[in-house]
Length: 289
Image (cartoon, rainbow, N blue to C red):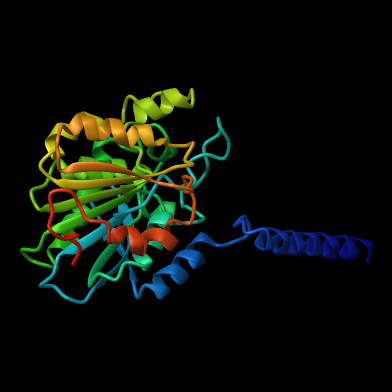
């Protein structure tokens, strides 16, 4: 009986802890997959796994008008680290911020792409290892896999152009992918890590020599209209990062914009419908159909 009482006490403590965390607005006891499914449901997005040469990627999509452009959202780095020096065992984000943006996008054709090893059971993507959510998060093979996934969805809207949106590290991948394609109509990033060398120096963390750096291809995307949103209160990726990237494009069709009161992981979805209506530079409309 004593052992049973102890077990019951432990269970009660665990339950109360989860309740406390939930009331505090945190997600420590939440199932990231269930949370993602709930977000997808609100945006009428359905889940799909995409086979690429390097990884099995998880996506959520809604394609209702193949005669209209495609808007593609790329997730951030997720839960890459347990602490400043210890990487996590699984990079799946507990709050998929790019998915929250996709879920409120009213466009007819919306695709959300999770990063390698996010939301996909690691046993189903054997190449997954901690390097791909730490040092190699922007490696060549990652860019190739994400670009292949994008091409699979482009095939469902033949001849249509693509609007790319990336959150945080997903912003870097949006840039790196756009530099390899000729069908990108626009680029938008939200709190985008567009120069990981600068960001890593800022936080005094290790360099990522096996990762490509978005700012290095800035001239290659200079002809694409683009708008980079930064939070006025973002201490993770300060606005200066996007501003430096825009300068590196040397293009009048690239612009950065500070959104006051927003931090790196703020509720960007609440502001997103309004931000989507922000006119793109060099464009007579928002280019978002």
